Length: 158
Image (cartoon, rainbow, N blue to C red; front, side, top):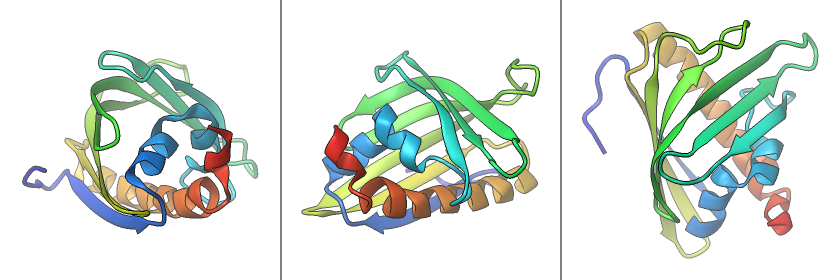
């Protein structure tokens, strides 16, 4: 992976799943719907995935207490199942138009049997403050992945 700047972040999390299961949890719409949110109480009402280089994705997370929805979209730049994903990341504004800033997410799945270390880099964020907010969100997403995506038996639907 790359050398980080002030607007980049890197996180690592080891989960109880094979690399194939972890990769599929990151790319299968049914499984993404179960875990992709920045808070354990949030839901994921929109999951669109066209998993191929040049294909697009769109994910929404919603806070049911306030009704606030956050939607991100982008394009897959690299798809190497079960080892690596690279995709662009652009938030949608409340009017549905893309934000002016696009960043890049790289996810590596380092499998060792039935355990996988996920290495996530989110680069070229708009500012150090944005990096810090994204770090908090990604940490919550990774916690949800283990609790609601993998451990909850969510992979059985694949």
